[in-house]
Amino acid sequence: MVKAKSNPFGMSETDIAKLSKLGKDAQSTVSIQTPRYPHQHRFTCSWCKATTTQHNPIRQSNVWICNICIPGTGSSATLVDQGGCTPHGNNNHRHGIRTHNGRIGCIGCANLAVTSTSSGEVKLSQVKTVLSEIENKLNKSATKKKKTQLEKAEPYIRSGLGEAFALAIVRGVDDGQVLDLWESTWWRQYPEDDVLIVSVLEGEHSEDDARTINEFRGEHPELALACIHKHVTVNWATMLMDSGFEEHPDAVRDILDGGEPHIVARIRRMKVDKKAMPPGLGAKIKPSQEQKKAVDKDAERRFMVNMKAADWAELYRTHLKNGGTDNTRNRDKILTIYENNWISTRATKKELNEWAKLFGIRGRTKMSTEELKKSVRTKASDIRSYVRNRMG
Image (cartoon, helix red, strand yellow):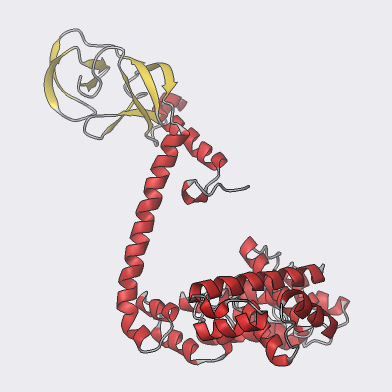
């Protein structure tokens, strides 16, 4: 379903229409028959609990309801689902009328008859207005919160810590785990918003667990994502790798699809350590769209690593204006851009200039940092298209 960018929260017209219908249903009004006691009487209203003397109050058996709670004869009021009151299976007991002081009186208990029901129209424009107001408030709140967090994180950032890492500490994530990750080197092949790095910065995984996941992430991206999203434990994944599945990515996928490890190993005639093998999952892990995209990206990266010289030569010829030089250093640069979601948010102007030079981007020396970043990302997107086309 295509989402309209102009709508609040990026919602589709269909989804907003659903909300509009819910609002319409919620604003049902009812006209009720109100049998009245024809004389003045002093009583305590069973709904608002006020003691009063009135003409023509509602009386049903021993139940008295004042004219403030239900004014006039044949009055209309907002119908609310007050829940919980279902004697005798009468549907009227599911509904009540909200009184002047916020109490809800049960229509069924007072034997009030609903004579007609009408629904108030809630226009799409009204729903959009309300949603837009909520969205604006949330955005303002988030901006204010981010500003406050940045102010608290400033001492750590000035000391040399990355912004995402400093903010994680401010949010209350264990500073030891955050700094362990910052001081290690294995994660620097990824951008700070990579799903594995984020899992540590949000306190979902320890640095040690993330490093372990990274060790098999290249060959087993589906297993890595299953660990990151906690469909399986890191310990379970490690047992599977150590028992003899490390060199068999296809077999690991079969197990994530619900296959029993010992059966898959036997069918594939694999040499495994049955005693070290973990139990099966019992059901297929269903990855989210986000996980599928991450797996696709890992597959593209692996394809690039294994590209033949002829493929690299064509890449240089078609996407690098000055032809480039096909060597290990330049290939690593291109792979780095690919890994870092095209360009890391921490990229310096010097780094951007180096990539712009590799890509043969004209006028790069006169560009601002943001202009350079945009140009390099555009070129990197072209490379991604080339890779995907080569993969078929």
